Length: 153
Image 1 (cartoon, rainbow, N blue to C red):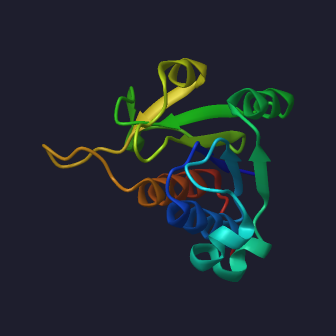
Image 2: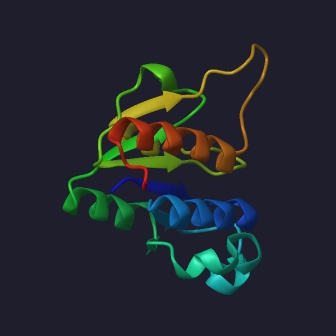
């Protein structure tokens, strides 16, 4: 199963949207604290709607706790970043990948960059800085599902 991890998310609406995506696409969702909002299903209900009850949700106290889970489950950590080394169209996904998305306000620190096995970016029009984190996550997980034949039919 593919997974999406949110590193210290700032915006509950993006978190809820990605939880809904996870439920609909059968993708695990990891939330890594501290969040920029009080994390609870109730707080995310508006954007996740009733899909929050169907998502495979993992809640981690901090990045170290998350890394322990990654190592114990033999997953590859793929960071989506504007400072990525590989463009999305050239990247090959596996079923064991976790797509890591950074904070909306600040991305991820260098220590998180160095922990990732792979770093990729979504090519954009010249002069554009970044996409909304939920939109970027949806684009990339869609490509990962296509490559790994992970879509439910």
